[in-house]
Image (cartoon, rainbow, N blue to C red; front, side, top):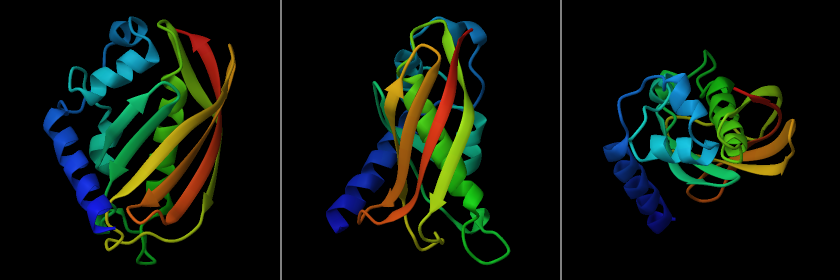
Length: 172
């Protein structure tokens, strides 16, 4: 576990050095690249990451066709009144992971929106959980609808939540 945890920490530190200040990419930048190219440019610091990533404190670690991995570390700033990380933290990570996995399969000039997101919470996260990764993978992508799944795990492989999504694909 120590080797995995150290690798994760090193991966995140290297990615954070590349990340541009948060912002919103221009519509033409989105329209002019395939989804994979667009996401790779965010990961490489050539385009700004969305403000939600800065707000929630997560960064892209891996991006490939049909798959993406985000990493973040839940902290007390993410707590609910019950003294654990709010379910919205996991929901945001998973929505981002499954949505971006779908986005990575789209050609230039295409966009998507989430039609449905289903999350199962397996165990609570706290500020002692350490870094977690949300991995999104496309199950099926058609011309109008795509389906993806995602999982949040820690460096030991412990599962915290998993999700599925259905997305609508459209021209932009």
